[in-house]
Image (cartoon, rainbow, N blue to C red; front, side, top):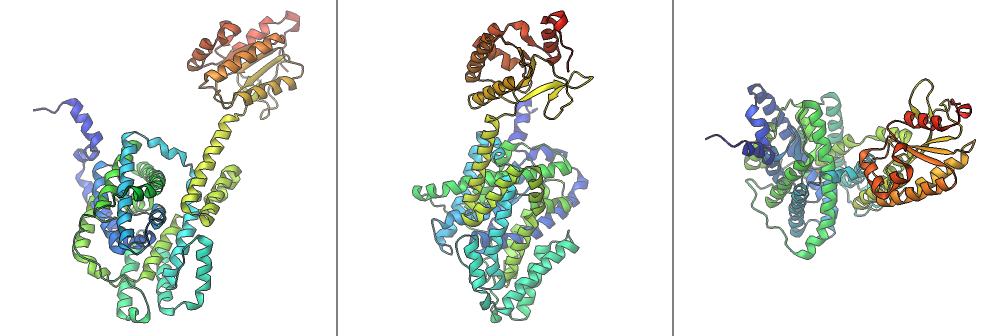
Length: 574
């Protein structure tokens, strides 16, 4: 029996794997297997290393790998995005859970998994409500500032593990002072292990960028520490890891605790989604394919819920891990399924191999990963391009270092929204002149050679007209009229930049036009869009101005005004 057409179209939307699996090519199989192995080689040691950022045992990092990889492979719209543990959101998780439970306790681990489930529920909810546009409210300067601040916060938190000394809680500067204070306590063996591991990570990334540096460093460090008896010399190691599959984790359902977790969960959803969407778009630029932002939210839901239910922690789409898949030659999400299979086998059979993995080596892996995320060149370029946005990025960094990670990103988003509100409520209006030899009209401040017409003011409002900016626009137009020499007797508004006008702006415009007419100044408009002209008609503006004074082009408005002048007084421009 043939499948109904509507059912065939709905199925790929609900299960995006069906959009690429039927057209899978045999020659993609080997690249996908190799790409999957590359992802596995990175995710296993990084999953264990990133668990230290969240403040949970390394085994939880391994529990986090398999369910999200499989869930996203079935539900995600990106052909190559890799979903897994993440440094940026991981630190927010640690801070969120740390406000409710003490790190190192069973309650802390349970709440970390509970937070992942809560994050998954929010992802699903936002996806069902088609709220993919929310990520647009974290502009790139805020995101880059957040990442740069996070690099500093994360690295200073890992330095004690790298050197084998006591750490401290608090902001960046508190942790930095604790590191400096404990430098005399540094023991040679753990510090040497950490520093050599970090040097190896940096060298491998420079000399062999396609090699699984994290796996190589973790493996070599584990073998060497075991051979020289490093534990006896004071080198801390991971210790025994349970083999086999995780049991279902029962989340905390205490309403009071869940309320405490909600702000952090929402912050992680916004930051993680923005990062995931960036990774998905980068992958699409490499191999093509369409990204559905709302389906990406949906796909992250089960990925996090299953991770939490199986004793893991939160996951998001990762640009760095996706780049590993791309570099490894992967072509489809089959690479993630291959990686999930090998992570599954690691849980069953290979966990004893990681018993002697030294904590300084894991810290070196985290620090190297964070430095790889840092892009100080972007901030230098931003300073040249837009000082206001650079200031916002700098404030985000300073907020993270002094107030905390959550406060820093919240401050950045709030400042970005305030800047957006300011810019939309203060559109840059312009007096226009005609470019010589053309019918183009441009801002006189940028084109001083443009032709003006004595007695005629050609003016552009510069943006939408609504309640928040209508007073500012009114002041700008009055200032332009006052500055016109000789005094203008006719105003022609180029409304091409106006896509929206509300009732408040319509009423203000009607009042202003009547005021001008009372002073003997006529009024006309050009290039008014239909969606703007209709509310003007309803407000009575067209009746006052006259439909003949609504022109299709600025040139038509200029010619109509010229024709109304006495023949001997008609200006030709100048």
